[in-house]
Length: 385
Image (cartoon, rainbow, N blue to C red; front, top):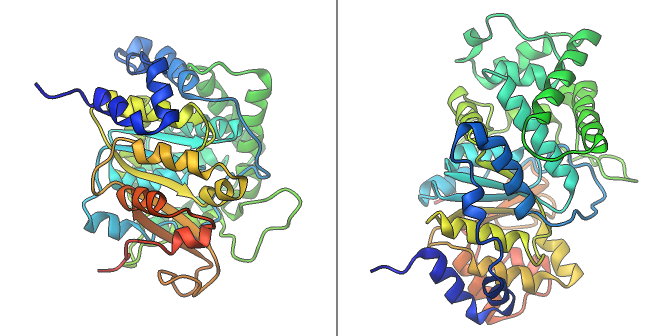
Protein backbone atom coordinates (compact mmCIF):
# COMPACT_ATOMS: atom_id res chain seq x y z
CA UNK A 1 0.00 0.00 0.00
CA UNK A 2 1.42 3.40 -0.98
CA UNK A 3 2.39 5.68 1.87
CA UNK A 4 0.15 8.80 1.99
CA UNK A 5 1.83 11.92 0.62
CA UNK A 6 1.34 13.85 3.86
CA UNK A 7 3.03 11.03 5.81
CA UNK A 8 5.97 11.06 3.40
CA UNK A 9 6.15 14.85 3.77
CA UNK A 10 6.36 14.62 7.57
CA UNK A 11 8.83 11.72 7.45
CA UNK A 12 11.10 13.58 5.04
CA UNK A 13 11.05 16.55 7.43
CA UNK A 14 13.14 14.57 9.89
CA UNK A 15 16.27 16.12 8.42
CA UNK A 16 14.97 19.65 8.95
CA UNK A 17 14.40 20.54 12.63
CA UNK A 18 11.80 23.21 11.92
CA UNK A 19 9.68 20.93 9.76
CA UNK A 20 10.14 17.95 12.04
CA UNK A 21 8.89 20.10 14.91
CA UNK A 22 5.92 21.21 12.80
CA UNK A 23 4.94 17.63 12.06
CA UNK A 24 5.52 16.50 15.64
CA UNK A 25 3.21 19.26 16.83
CA UNK A 26 0.67 18.37 14.16
CA UNK A 27 0.41 21.92 12.81
CA UNK A 28 -3.06 22.43 11.39
CA UNK A 29 -3.69 18.72 10.91
CA UNK A 30 -7.34 19.54 10.19
CA UNK A 31 -6.54 22.18 7.58
CA UNK A 32 -7.67 20.02 4.68
CA UNK A 33 -11.05 19.72 6.34
CA UNK A 34 -11.33 23.51 6.31
CA UNK A 35 -11.50 23.58 2.54
CA UNK A 36 -15.04 24.33 1.41
CA UNK A 37 -16.94 21.12 0.76
CA UNK A 38 -20.46 22.50 0.42
CA UNK A 39 -21.58 25.77 -1.09
CA UNK A 40 -23.60 26.90 1.93
CA UNK A 41 -20.54 26.53 4.15
CA UNK A 42 -17.92 27.82 1.74
CA UNK A 43 -17.58 31.35 3.14
CA UNK A 44 -17.11 30.13 6.71
CA UNK A 45 -14.68 27.45 5.57
CA UNK A 46 -12.72 29.97 3.51
CA UNK A 47 -12.48 32.34 6.46
CA UNK A 48 -11.28 29.55 8.75
CA UNK A 49 -8.70 28.47 6.20
CA UNK A 50 -7.26 31.96 5.81
CA UNK A 51 -7.04 32.28 9.59
CA UNK A 52 -5.50 28.83 10.13
CA UNK A 53 -2.80 29.29 7.50
CA UNK A 54 -1.85 32.85 8.41
CA UNK A 55 0.68 34.36 10.79
CA UNK A 56 0.56 37.85 12.38
CA UNK A 57 1.23 40.51 9.77
CA UNK A 58 4.57 42.25 9.31
CA UNK A 59 5.76 45.54 7.83
CA UNK A 60 6.92 46.45 4.35
CA UNK A 61 7.34 50.02 3.15
CA UNK A 62 4.87 49.98 0.28
CA UNK A 63 1.20 49.42 -0.42
CA UNK A 64 2.35 47.32 -3.41
CA UNK A 65 -0.98 47.78 -5.18
CA UNK A 66 0.52 46.67 -8.49
CA UNK A 67 3.79 45.07 -9.52
CA UNK A 68 6.96 46.95 -10.43
CA UNK A 69 8.13 44.02 -12.60
CA UNK A 70 7.51 44.78 -16.27
CA UNK A 71 9.26 41.49 -17.09
CA UNK A 72 6.76 39.39 -15.15
CA UNK A 73 5.42 37.54 -18.23
CA UNK A 74 8.80 36.58 -19.68
CA UNK A 75 8.86 33.18 -17.95
CA UNK A 76 5.54 31.96 -19.35
CA UNK A 77 6.81 30.33 -22.54
CA UNK A 78 9.53 28.47 -20.65
CA UNK A 79 6.96 27.22 -18.16
CA UNK A 80 4.88 25.93 -21.09
CA UNK A 81 7.89 24.31 -22.71
CA UNK A 82 8.88 22.53 -19.49
CA UNK A 83 5.38 21.23 -18.85
CA UNK A 84 4.77 23.20 -15.65
CA UNK A 85 1.01 22.88 -15.26
CA UNK A 86 -1.65 22.15 -12.66
CA UNK A 87 -0.72 21.32 -9.09
CA UNK A 88 -0.58 24.01 -6.43
CA UNK A 89 0.62 27.55 -6.94
CA UNK A 90 2.19 29.79 -4.28
CA UNK A 91 2.97 33.43 -5.00
CA UNK A 92 3.69 36.72 -3.29
CA UNK A 93 2.29 40.17 -3.99
CA UNK A 94 -0.79 41.53 -5.77
CA UNK A 95 -2.47 40.69 -9.08
CA UNK A 96 0.52 39.54 -11.15
CA UNK A 97 -0.21 36.22 -9.48
CA UNK A 98 -3.40 35.94 -11.53
CA UNK A 99 -1.41 35.90 -14.78
CA UNK A 100 0.71 32.99 -13.52
CA UNK A 101 -2.43 31.22 -12.27
CA UNK A 102 -4.18 31.73 -15.60
CA UNK A 103 -1.26 30.19 -17.48
CA UNK A 104 -0.46 27.30 -15.12
CA UNK A 105 -4.09 26.31 -14.40
CA UNK A 106 -3.41 25.06 -10.83
CA UNK A 107 -6.05 23.26 -8.78
CA UNK A 108 -5.41 25.60 -5.83
CA UNK A 109 -3.43 28.80 -5.34
CA UNK A 110 -2.05 30.56 -2.28
CA UNK A 111 -1.23 34.27 -2.48
CA UNK A 112 1.27 34.91 0.27
CA UNK A 113 2.61 38.14 1.77
CA UNK A 114 4.05 39.40 5.02
CA UNK A 115 1.62 42.34 4.94
CA UNK A 116 -1.94 41.82 6.13
CA UNK A 117 -2.81 44.60 3.69
CA UNK A 118 -2.01 42.27 0.80
CA UNK A 119 -4.57 39.78 2.11
CA UNK A 120 -7.09 42.63 2.24
CA UNK A 121 -6.27 43.63 -1.32
CA UNK A 122 -6.73 40.02 -2.42
CA UNK A 123 -10.21 40.11 -0.87
CA UNK A 124 -10.89 43.21 -2.95
CA UNK A 125 -9.86 41.31 -6.09
CA UNK A 126 -11.96 38.34 -4.98
CA UNK A 127 -14.98 40.63 -4.71
CA UNK A 128 -14.32 42.07 -8.16
CA UNK A 129 -14.15 38.59 -9.69
CA UNK A 130 -17.43 37.71 -8.00
CA UNK A 131 -19.24 40.85 -9.16
CA UNK A 132 -17.92 40.96 -12.73
CA UNK A 133 -19.29 38.66 -15.42
CA UNK A 134 -16.34 39.26 -17.74
CA UNK A 135 -13.13 41.23 -18.27
CA UNK A 136 -14.92 44.41 -19.28
CA UNK A 137 -17.01 44.52 -16.12
CA UNK A 138 -14.00 43.60 -13.98
CA UNK A 139 -11.95 46.53 -15.29
CA UNK A 140 -14.91 48.89 -15.04
CA UNK A 141 -15.53 47.94 -11.40
CA UNK A 142 -11.81 48.05 -10.54
CA UNK A 143 -11.49 51.57 -11.96
CA UNK A 144 -14.90 52.86 -10.85
CA UNK A 145 -16.17 53.33 -14.40
CA UNK A 146 -19.83 52.89 -15.39
CA UNK A 147 -20.53 49.27 -16.28
CA UNK A 148 -20.55 48.93 -20.07
CA UNK A 149 -23.87 47.95 -21.62
CA UNK A 150 -23.93 44.58 -23.41
CA UNK A 151 -20.40 43.95 -22.10
CA UNK A 152 -20.41 40.37 -23.40
CA UNK A 153 -19.95 41.73 -26.92
CA UNK A 154 -16.44 42.71 -25.77
CA UNK A 155 -15.52 39.15 -24.75
CA UNK A 156 -13.55 38.36 -27.90
CA UNK A 157 -11.81 41.71 -28.08
CA UNK A 158 -8.02 41.76 -27.77
CA UNK A 159 -6.72 43.33 -24.58
CA UNK A 160 -5.52 46.48 -26.37
CA UNK A 161 -9.02 47.14 -27.71
CA UNK A 162 -10.57 46.37 -24.33
CA UNK A 163 -8.24 48.78 -22.53
CA UNK A 164 -8.92 51.46 -25.14
CA UNK A 165 -12.67 50.98 -24.71
CA UNK A 166 -12.42 51.20 -20.91
CA UNK A 167 -10.49 54.45 -21.38
CA UNK A 168 -13.53 55.92 -23.12
CA UNK A 169 -15.69 55.36 -20.03
CA UNK A 170 -15.61 58.38 -17.72
CA UNK A 171 -15.59 57.87 -13.97
CA UNK A 172 -18.43 59.68 -12.23
CA UNK A 173 -19.12 60.20 -8.54
CA UNK A 174 -22.02 57.77 -8.87
CA UNK A 175 -20.06 55.05 -10.70
CA UNK A 176 -17.14 55.29 -8.26
CA UNK A 177 -19.39 55.14 -5.22
CA UNK A 178 -21.34 52.24 -6.71
CA UNK A 179 -18.16 50.24 -7.42
CA UNK A 180 -16.81 50.80 -3.90
CA UNK A 181 -20.14 49.85 -2.32
CA UNK A 182 -20.39 46.68 -4.43
CA UNK A 183 -16.89 45.58 -3.44
CA UNK A 184 -17.38 46.23 0.27
CA UNK A 185 -20.72 44.39 0.26
CA UNK A 186 -19.10 41.40 -1.42
CA UNK A 187 -16.09 41.45 0.90
CA UNK A 188 -18.36 41.43 3.96
CA UNK A 189 -19.76 38.09 2.77
CA UNK A 190 -16.41 36.40 2.08
CA UNK A 191 -16.14 34.68 5.47
CA UNK A 192 -12.95 36.38 6.70
CA UNK A 193 -13.36 38.28 9.97
CA UNK A 194 -12.66 41.93 9.19
CA UNK A 195 -12.56 45.01 11.38
CA UNK A 196 -13.83 48.46 10.46
CA UNK A 197 -10.18 49.40 9.85
CA UNK A 198 -9.77 46.45 7.46
CA UNK A 199 -12.83 47.52 5.49
CA UNK A 200 -11.55 51.11 5.38
CA UNK A 201 -8.21 49.86 4.05
CA UNK A 202 -9.91 47.87 1.29
CA UNK A 203 -11.96 50.93 0.35
CA UNK A 204 -8.80 53.08 0.34
CA UNK A 205 -7.01 50.67 -1.97
CA UNK A 206 -9.99 50.58 -4.32
CA UNK A 207 -10.15 54.38 -4.27
CA UNK A 208 -6.50 54.55 -5.36
CA UNK A 209 -7.27 52.40 -8.40
CA UNK A 210 -10.28 54.59 -9.17
CA UNK A 211 -8.35 57.85 -8.78
CA UNK A 212 -5.27 56.85 -10.79
CA UNK A 213 -6.98 54.57 -13.29
CA UNK A 214 -4.76 52.73 -15.73
CA UNK A 215 -1.96 55.18 -14.90
CA UNK A 216 -1.54 53.70 -11.39
CA UNK A 217 2.09 52.88 -10.48
CA UNK A 218 3.86 50.97 -7.75
CA UNK A 219 4.87 53.30 -4.91
CA UNK A 220 7.37 53.05 -2.06
CA UNK A 221 7.07 55.06 1.14
CA UNK A 222 9.44 58.03 1.10
CA UNK A 223 10.61 57.57 -2.48
CA UNK A 224 9.20 58.81 -5.77
CA UNK A 225 8.26 56.23 -8.43
CA UNK A 226 11.30 55.08 -10.39
CA UNK A 227 11.51 55.55 -14.15
CA UNK A 228 11.25 51.82 -14.74
CA UNK A 229 8.06 51.30 -12.72
CA UNK A 230 5.30 50.29 -15.16
CA UNK A 231 1.77 51.61 -15.05
CA UNK A 232 -1.23 49.34 -14.66
CA UNK A 233 -1.91 49.92 -18.36
CA UNK A 234 1.57 48.69 -19.29
CA UNK A 235 1.24 45.60 -17.09
CA UNK A 236 -2.08 44.64 -18.69
CA UNK A 237 -0.69 45.15 -22.20
CA UNK A 238 2.61 43.33 -21.55
CA UNK A 239 3.60 40.40 -23.76
CA UNK A 240 5.45 37.13 -23.33
CA UNK A 241 8.76 36.47 -25.06
CA UNK A 242 6.92 35.29 -28.18
CA UNK A 243 5.34 38.72 -28.42
CA UNK A 244 1.86 37.56 -27.42
CA UNK A 245 -0.35 39.42 -24.91
CA UNK A 246 -0.38 37.21 -21.83
CA UNK A 247 -1.75 38.95 -18.74
CA UNK A 248 -4.75 37.36 -17.02
CA UNK A 249 -6.97 39.89 -18.78
CA UNK A 250 -5.50 39.28 -22.24
CA UNK A 251 -8.05 36.57 -23.04
CA UNK A 252 -11.57 36.01 -21.73
CA UNK A 253 -10.88 32.29 -21.08
CA UNK A 254 -7.96 33.15 -18.78
CA UNK A 255 -10.06 35.61 -16.83
CA UNK A 256 -12.87 33.06 -16.52
CA UNK A 257 -10.46 30.40 -15.20
CA UNK A 258 -9.27 32.67 -12.39
CA UNK A 259 -12.85 33.81 -11.71
CA UNK A 260 -13.98 30.17 -11.36
CA UNK A 261 -11.09 29.34 -9.02
CA UNK A 262 -11.95 32.38 -6.89
CA UNK A 263 -15.64 31.39 -6.84
CA UNK A 264 -14.68 27.98 -5.44
CA UNK A 265 -12.54 29.68 -2.75
CA UNK A 266 -9.40 28.09 -4.16
CA UNK A 267 -7.36 31.28 -4.37
CA UNK A 268 -6.39 31.58 -0.72
CA UNK A 269 -4.75 34.77 0.61
CA UNK A 270 -2.29 34.06 3.41
CA UNK A 271 -0.53 36.47 5.75
CA UNK A 272 2.95 35.27 6.57
CA UNK A 273 6.70 35.64 6.41
CA UNK A 274 8.28 33.30 3.83
CA UNK A 275 10.83 32.39 6.51
CA UNK A 276 8.26 32.23 9.29
CA UNK A 277 7.55 29.30 11.56
CA UNK A 278 4.02 28.51 10.44
CA UNK A 279 2.41 29.81 7.23
CA UNK A 280 4.56 28.26 4.50
CA UNK A 281 4.85 25.05 6.52
CA UNK A 282 1.08 24.83 6.86
CA UNK A 283 0.59 25.50 3.14
CA UNK A 284 3.01 22.69 2.35
CA UNK A 285 1.11 20.32 4.60
CA UNK A 286 -2.21 21.25 3.05
CA UNK A 287 -0.81 20.69 -0.44
CA UNK A 288 0.44 17.28 0.67
CA UNK A 289 -2.94 16.40 2.19
CA UNK A 290 -4.55 17.20 -1.14
CA UNK A 291 -2.15 14.79 -2.87
CA UNK A 292 -0.71 17.66 -4.92
CA UNK A 293 2.73 19.10 -5.56
CA UNK A 294 3.86 22.68 -6.02
CA UNK A 295 3.94 23.65 -9.67
CA UNK A 296 5.43 27.09 -9.07
CA UNK A 297 6.54 29.28 -6.19
CA UNK A 298 6.67 32.92 -7.24
CA UNK A 299 9.00 34.68 -4.80
CA UNK A 300 9.54 37.95 -6.70
CA UNK A 301 12.70 39.38 -5.09
CA UNK A 302 11.64 38.60 -1.51
CA UNK A 303 14.59 36.21 -1.11
CA UNK A 304 16.90 39.24 -1.33
CA UNK A 305 15.36 40.61 1.87
CA UNK A 306 15.56 37.22 3.58
CA UNK A 307 19.26 36.93 2.77
CA UNK A 308 19.94 40.40 4.15
CA UNK A 309 17.84 39.69 7.26
CA UNK A 310 19.63 36.41 7.97
CA UNK A 311 16.44 34.32 7.76
CA UNK A 312 17.11 32.80 4.34
CA UNK A 313 18.36 29.39 5.63
CA UNK A 314 15.06 28.70 7.38
CA UNK A 315 13.12 29.67 4.26
CA UNK A 316 15.36 27.48 2.11
CA UNK A 317 14.81 24.43 4.33
CA UNK A 318 11.05 24.92 4.16
CA UNK A 319 11.01 25.32 0.37
CA UNK A 320 13.11 22.20 -0.08
CA UNK A 321 10.50 20.23 1.86
CA UNK A 322 7.46 21.48 -0.05
CA UNK A 323 5.81 18.65 -2.02
CA UNK A 324 7.35 19.02 -5.47
CA UNK A 325 8.64 17.19 -8.51
CA UNK A 326 11.35 17.69 -11.14
CA UNK A 327 9.44 20.46 -12.92
CA UNK A 328 8.40 22.43 -9.82
CA UNK A 329 9.75 25.96 -10.31
CA UNK A 330 10.72 29.02 -8.35
CA UNK A 331 9.92 32.23 -10.24
CA UNK A 332 11.99 35.19 -9.06
CA UNK A 333 12.76 38.75 -10.12
CA UNK A 334 16.10 40.53 -10.32
CA UNK A 335 16.36 44.31 -10.47
CA UNK A 336 19.82 44.84 -11.89
CA UNK A 337 19.05 46.94 -14.93
CA UNK A 338 19.22 46.11 -18.62
CA UNK A 339 21.99 43.63 -19.42
CA UNK A 340 22.76 42.85 -15.77
CA UNK A 341 21.88 39.15 -16.12
CA UNK A 342 22.26 36.62 -18.97
CA UNK A 343 18.45 36.40 -19.13
CA UNK A 344 17.90 40.16 -19.24
CA UNK A 345 15.69 41.41 -22.06
CA UNK A 346 16.50 44.62 -23.93
CA UNK A 347 14.36 47.50 -22.75
CA UNK A 348 13.53 45.96 -19.35
CA UNK A 349 15.06 46.99 -16.03
CA UNK A 350 13.81 43.87 -14.23
CA UNK A 351 14.62 40.30 -15.20
CA UNK A 352 12.35 37.34 -14.54
CA UNK A 353 14.05 34.05 -13.73
CA UNK A 354 13.26 30.36 -13.25
CA UNK A 355 14.98 27.74 -11.14
CA UNK A 356 13.75 24.27 -10.24
CA UNK A 357 13.10 23.66 -6.56
CA UNK A 358 15.45 20.67 -6.81
CA UNK A 359 18.29 22.85 -8.13
CA UNK A 360 17.60 25.43 -5.44
CA UNK A 361 17.73 22.78 -2.72
CA UNK A 362 21.01 21.43 -4.11
CA UNK A 363 22.53 24.91 -4.28
CA UNK A 364 21.62 25.64 -0.69
CA UNK A 365 22.83 22.23 0.52
CA UNK A 366 26.14 22.37 -1.36
CA UNK A 367 27.22 25.88 -0.53
CA UNK A 368 25.87 28.80 1.42
CA UNK A 369 24.10 31.55 -0.48
CA UNK A 370 25.53 34.84 0.74
CA UNK A 371 23.99 37.32 -1.69
CA UNK A 372 20.95 37.60 -3.93
CA UNK A 373 23.13 38.14 -6.99
CA UNK A 374 24.86 34.86 -6.24
CA UNK A 375 21.48 33.16 -5.99
CA UNK A 376 20.11 34.51 -9.28
CA UNK A 377 23.22 33.50 -11.22
CA UNK A 378 23.22 29.85 -10.08
CA UNK A 379 21.50 27.14 -12.11
CA UNK A 380 18.76 29.27 -13.65
CA UNK A 381 16.61 27.78 -16.41
CA UNK A 382 17.12 29.43 -19.82
CA UNK A 383 13.97 31.22 -20.88
CA UNK A 384 14.53 30.48 -24.55
CA UNK A 385 15.24 26.99 -25.93
